[in-house]
Image (cartoon, rainbow, N blue to C red; front, side, top):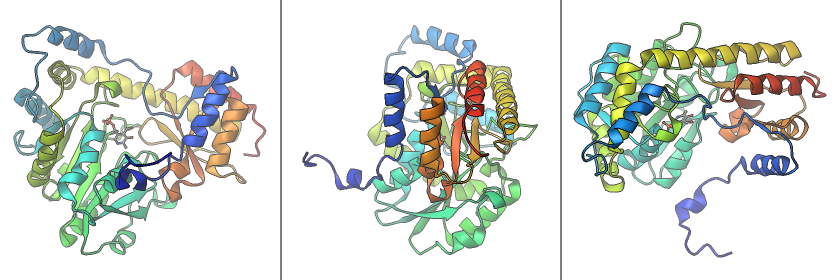
Amino acid sequence: MTQAFVSERIRRLPPYLFARIDELKQEAIASGIDVIDLGVGDPDVRTPDKIIERLKSAVHGEGAHRYSSYSGLPRLRKTFASWFEKRYGVSLDPDREILPLIGSKEGIGHIFFGVCNPGDETLLPDPGYPVYAAAATLAGAISRFFPLRSDRNYLPEIDEIQKLISPRTKMLWMNYPSNPTTAVATEDVFRSMVELAKDNRLLICHDTAYAELAFDGRKSVSLMQIPGGKETGVEFHSMSKTFCMTGWRVGFAVGNGEAIGALAKVKTNLDSGIFLPIQEAAITAFTDCGEEAEGIRKRFEARRNSFVSGLNEIGWKVPLPPATFYVWAPLPSGYSSMEFSAKLLKEAGIVCTPGVGFGDNGEGFVRMTLTVPEDRLALALERIAALKVEW
Ligand SMILES: Cc1ncc(COP(=O)(O)O)c(C=O)c1O
């Protein structure tokens, strides 16, 4: 097949590492296996009723069908600002420092176009959410990866990062609570990253999609809480996980006014705002669904407790994730992450994600999600227990 209609930048995107697992999954389904999909981070739990009801009523509103403003309803931006103040004690200017997004992934992808020139460099965590590197490639930026290691609690190490900085380095990406490692970061970590960013004139981009899914009484930290954080950084928030709204596509970015403005300019030229009834529903979520969000968090915490203790009883020594709805599980010896994922699928009908898909440093791990019902997680445990593996 020719590639006459495929751009260089698309050709430069890395091959789809999960393709083999996908193929095996389709084969397993076709052969009648009852597949338990712990591969995708997409909650089975329903969006809270109040949010759905608000969407329904707003759809009938006058003008609901029309284009919305690029920067979102002023009431929506104010709602994000009040929530931020309450949650983190940080005040943000709703006109300059907050931008609604069509899901945080949209903003994460587009900010590269607003900030980087072709050939600029961006520092990315390995393992990390693959969208950062893909977006860098699409924008013509170059990715430099710094390692996150289990023996350092998956926190960035300053000297490793410093080695990678060049005069063309523009951005430093962080993601806490982290996908896939589930790690959380303390204020000290953010403080040292802010210093590093200031010294080297970098923009910190902090992806905090799992901010509200921290467990055991932890409260995740916002970059905006750190002195200098707002000036040196942009932070991406998502409603997808907090309120189980993955398909609704709504999130927001906060932080440095200049970078937020650049992102807004990209978006003005590429999209036409969030569907108005979804904005109304988002306002309801942030003003009236605190208890529901807490219920969602507790549900994932309970699933984490029973699934991870079940794994440990079987003999698979997996640490308790401090946050997110993922389990980042070290492999028994003798397997690569692709091999073990293929084994889980073939012999137990369980889909998981091979760690190497998140970067070279993800090798040695698989990621499993807690986004299927409790009885399916229990069945997954039974099947894992029946595997012939030397844990
Ligand atoms: C680390 C991380 N960031 C961002 C996102 C994107 O979330 P959304 O675009 O639904 O807000 C995801 C989704 O899985 C994620 O895992």
